[in-house]
Length: 190
Image (spheres, rainbow, N blue to C red):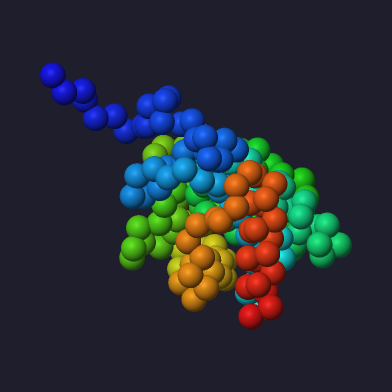
């Protein structure tokens, strides 16, 4: 008898003896053992102004640490911030409001040819996520969110393609954080 195929790896597959700090992360091609690297990029020059790295597969808890790093590095909060749907949560939208940052956070994946990166599911009226969805829909093709693709995505493309960086070489979260910092510095110097 064969076992049914599951969408998640088994608990036994999540133990990594080579790097116990790393975690199983979902990707569009399945699962990988690794880390979740983040970068905040300046809109005018494609300079990485802040970076973080975690062993959590979720981006939701990474917005506030990125904003903290931006403020520490630049001495002030950014005027605007855009982020993909992985960062969309009531708490993150509240954080942007509290810090007086004009936010543009996708509430869902944007399909090719559509006007806005908004969710198709029904949102509870009056919530911050519903208001963000309305904000993005109202702006349509003129939305500031659309600039994210021109600002952040090329930086990750340059790191992966031009520099050939596809995996971390070091082990343990502290060493991998340092490796990610060096990769970000190398991008800024190029």
